[in-house]
Length: 206
Image 1 (tube, one colour):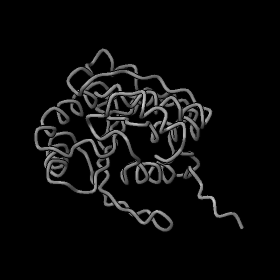
Image 2: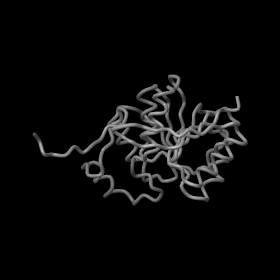
Image 3: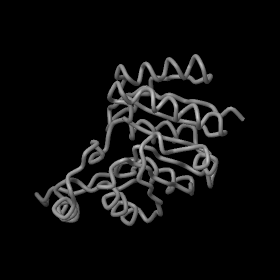
């Protein structure tokens, strides 16, 4: 039996390279350091993938993954539902890692560098679904993220946002439920992942 440890993991059919993988180490050496925690696979991404496995998207759904990091959730959508996916992140450092994984998983992902406030109505009308995981971890993120969710809602875009249950996310979810008709569900993903998060599901206005 080989004692060599694998340098990748598979999450719901998406291959993700470990930090020890030579190509990841190469990109880390040639890139400036990340600034907004977009350099790992978060539990919320796994929860979103499991959630969408239970409630599949329509094929060719146009998906905007905000705070995309390495873009794993968007790749799951592209691979399983033939979705047209764009990843948005404030930190352009993550995009070479995203494109490396897109090639690895044989999918195409467009990328845009922007913060929540730059995602306007003109951009949102190009999409059907906005997804994001672990994107409301600081108090000052709650207000701009709610504004984004409200813009998406008003432009006919459904939103799915997952979080382990931090206070800023709880405030976001409470406001979205009261004003936008959203629902929150605690979603558990069993072995081998053994993770759980809250999923905020905000319906489109039309």
